[in-house]
Image 1 (cartoon, one colour):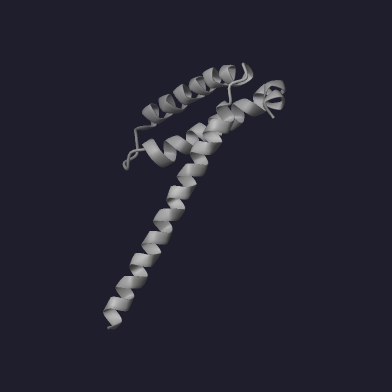
Image 2: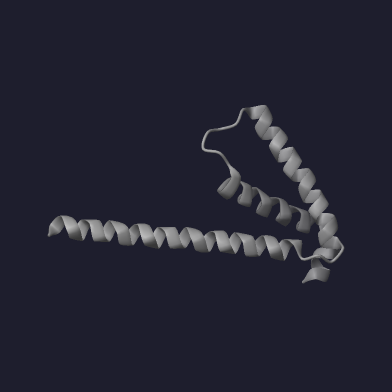
Length: 98
């Protein structure tokens, strides 16, 4: 898989950029919207950072795999919060009916 990513750098770059954007939006984004120019600058810097990570990916470091693990862990936490919230609502409705 690592060899395939090294042979297809454009696809690797797009995957890295999408994963970094997802991680930023789910973890580091503030609640209020940034001004448009700051938002554009932020995405330009993420694109440049993705280019640096692409160099590491081509040099046989598992950047994409590490980002996929990070996204998978984030999804597991999100599922856990969903289940806990559902259990909390269920216990609250049971307490109200008693």
